[in-house]
Image (cartoon, rainbow, N blue to C red; front, side, top):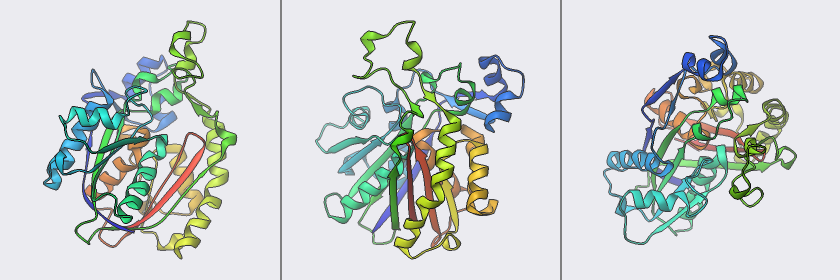
Length: 327
């Protein structure tokens, strides 16, 4: 499948939280959070909503593409920190842009793999001729749901948004060479927020169960499962495309944590030049993580026309996902 990436833009909220400030928030010794996560800084929203942050990134992307919001016939939102249970964040985002005419807008719920699933879905729908111009928007406000008692995960995440404009009109674009997604339900409890929906409704909130309404991650079990499954997960993707890892010019992974990324790079047998890392600069942005890294890789000249790029990640579920594109 071939689609055109018309533009990609990112947005970070204004409040910068340094590693030193994070140490103070967590009540740990100076230097602990940087050593534990590798994150030098992250950015926190102050008064902005998920839809507002997404709208800011999308407005920039539309401007860069020379388009108006009314040119879109599809808007897909991806987020692990949706603004509210209903309606979908994509509808709220469209309202933020002041859109009044009807068009298709919906969310994809795949947490950290949301961008990859959304990209695969949009490309497939365009290939079928159902849509011609789409926006894919990832927007995350992780800061409001962090459990400061789980210090390592609390120090890891940041807020941010990314928007991409895609169409099938120009005939010169990125080729999606292959996609693969797989879920391992044995890890369903490794990364979760139990409270707030029908399983544990907000009306049952109390001081005794308040931790269930915050983000909960068993980092060691999550990492172990991903590490065990990743290489085997990739083999069918390469077989399907007729490629090998040697054909890949750059791997752009989900920016989980610096230590996890370093170990993944070594496990895949890649040099630093062929493996993109930027988690140090803004932390783990959940669904916005992979497109944020893609944006920065393009801006830094790490991605060139004709390069084969592997977008790779994991998410709550536990799920793995990979998309190979020719840029």
